[in-house]
Image (cartoon, rainbow, N blue to C red):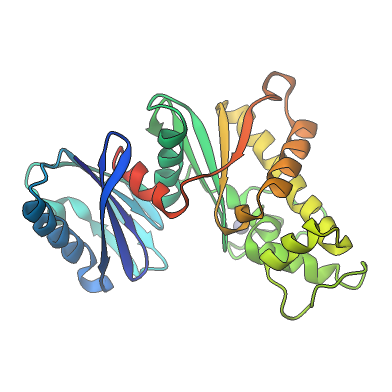
Length: 294
Ligand SMILES: [Zn+2]
């Protein structure tokens, strides 16, 4: 039995995994001061109660982590924390690994979709835009553990919106849920639309696009164009088989995924035009499953 831990702000999700499937789970409510101690104690107690023999444990962490040392988890409020001694207090011998949550989710999607040796890339479209790379079944963090930071790839040459990171024209300024609303507000007066400028959400905008709303379709095209260009750039660097599109925005479904594919083909190198781009399937379970196989 393996354990995958998906760390969130106040809730930590734990999956007990056997043969690439989550067979049991725990949710641990905690606070930042004792987060890892609380989670590890809960896993230890539960495993003993259920008679589980643990082979390996992994953590998907929402921020920057280098090896087993947390640099910064901005939304949790934890910095500069070495997990090794904390894990050892509860599990003296258990092998464990860490990565950021996007990488863990990428591995989870890949394992659920094909096999343990596959290569794929996951793009998460949420409040921001994240990425995770898996090559031949192994998560790649990169030399600075910054491998998936594609939200800050420069793709929008037109608007140059300022990004939270300080740069301009980053992918997430147009392709995240907040970016989609930003673009729609900017063009609200240009198109005929039923969308309410003050209250519209990314979901409203994608739903409007499905109904043929002019503004909705314009935004859908702009977002898909930015993502198609980004995927083409990533693909010539990493050469994987499949891109998985996840996060809340991906719930727009076929209309978004198909449009991303169309734009991708425009920008893609001829040798990689026919790679697979598909919607991620595991939702919130991807991080847990992937973490278990780090
Ligand atoms: Zn940025």
